[in-house]
Image (tube, rainbow, N blue to C red; front, side, top):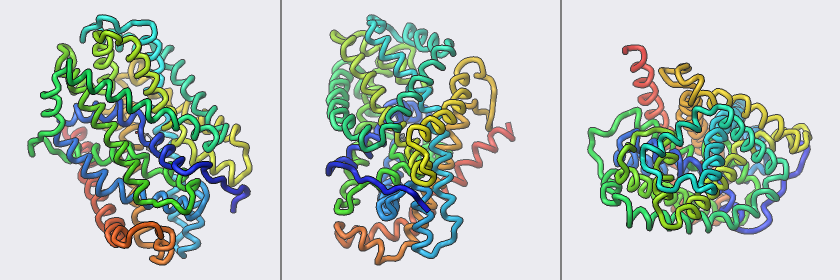
Length: 459
Ligand code: TRP
């Protein structure tokens, strides 16, 4: 049952912008480089690209299709589609798990986004000038040690997210992504140009695009798979929620291809640039962990002629990119409370935002006071939250979405909704959803989780 009717995006192209805004975020700029560095480079990049192509793209189409067909938030959408398809009610657990995963991801995402707020200020104040590797490490560590400041920015970013959600996605989001995305790309090319000129570009390319078979591991594969969901915002209903605002006469396949291509491009450009600086800077290693971007880029900006300006614009861009992503993490839950119970969007955003904020305290203190507290398998709170939500819940959610659309929705329904696609797309996509994607997810989940657990119990 639902109380409210759904709005549709105002302009054509808005879905692409909003979905790209959701996809492109800290996942591309902060996370992709650091997990690539931690997992050995080329082998990891290759697995990530394969997962985006074989699992991410087909599941993104499925998610859009579900949302657009039901024109409702993910919880109600799965419930209604279950009824239409005569499927068991348990399938709608999908929507609930998604809302939970969204809250968990948001909880640590705003902590990292908070660091980017602080770094925007540092850039404006010219604090990067003349920085070397060691000074940059020290600057970053002094932020982490200041838990009060990290908490303050975590709170600010949560409030920023709540503010846009309260305005409503179509009003709050459409306008901002429209000018942000082009500017972000412009800046990335400036950064890339500088990396080619000043960084160790060759070593960077070799690190990211050549691989040895022995670099592959099940755990690395699981992280790569989790990241393919994370970076495309898949598996928890964010894209389903946005799909519910997408006009019916828009082609799903080409839209998804555009979003996935833009998202991957951003990650690869940022990655190549960051590693070019990493290999040119003594004192910084590829495996530096979550601080990689924060210690690497300030050194680059600090030694550029107009680095203060470029650095400021860059970090402000990262803030905006993160902002358009956090919104989508909460949108499914907010839309649910609003459409199901008639709770105003303001109250719903405040409520869910507060839950995520409180959960995020664990991540705020993971980098200082509670650095030694282990929650799961030798991981601190932040790593545990990320591991469970990203590497387990998102793939699981994605697998259920693939199975549901692959097996439960009838061909006529899907053909009707995909009327703008070429027939071969349907013929290729359906079996991928039915067999390839779910089997691959299951295989990598099982093989990826056990080594992580065993490592702890055996050692
Ligand atoms: N994709 C975003 C990024 O790369 C993060 C994100 C936004 C997300 N919405 C999501 C991740 C939904 C998983 C699910 O930064």
